[in-house]
Image (cartoon, rainbow, N blue to C red; front, side, top):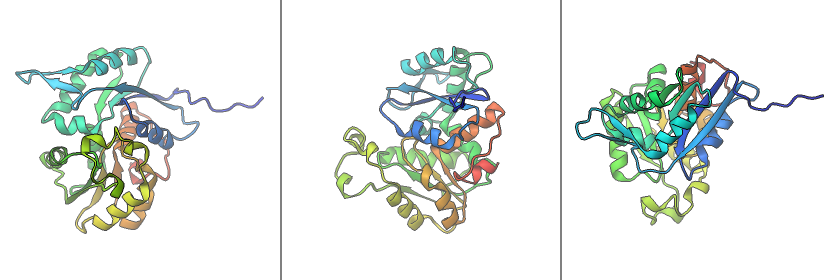
Length: 265
């Protein structure tokens, strides 16, 4: 009798909150998780504007959006190791202290012992682990000018002043489509990694000591290894850093090959 893997999370069970109409985060996480590793991933979908928790008037705390609060309560029954807000935009647009405030708001709703984190905190931990000080930051095509500016400010305020930045150009077909319409019109399902690779390689400044690709909906983990080989610098991506940090918070160290030097840390 043969025994096939059933992806049971007996070592770590990680819950991820993702944008309701996206497929990229789950696909990339399952690509990253080694087979028979005892690690499982469980997604909850959020339909809300960023950030997914709003500051109270006195900025003493944040109130979670309904989907996020409901998801935390559902996750509480699932014996998770970690729950992560897999949404770069929420961290970027939340403002100073938002990541920490949302972790404080999530924790009482989760099961005792389940750790909470955000994509922003995950990226900061990864940048620090690799000693990156001046990253080249890459943003998805659907990030408007205000979100790109907020992203640059987010990392600059945390002592990771970007050496430069790039907003991915998805090509002629999409150039005249407003930012807010790119996903509704299907760009998320027609992403190509080869042009993204070429644009990053061409635009990466010489003084950048690493690359960070923001946006959990941006398809990119398949080019991490190639970019590292060609640019001779570490490459981080939104989904990669959240899985890495989630495993560290879970106390699990597993060998993951082909998806960047981060997993050697």
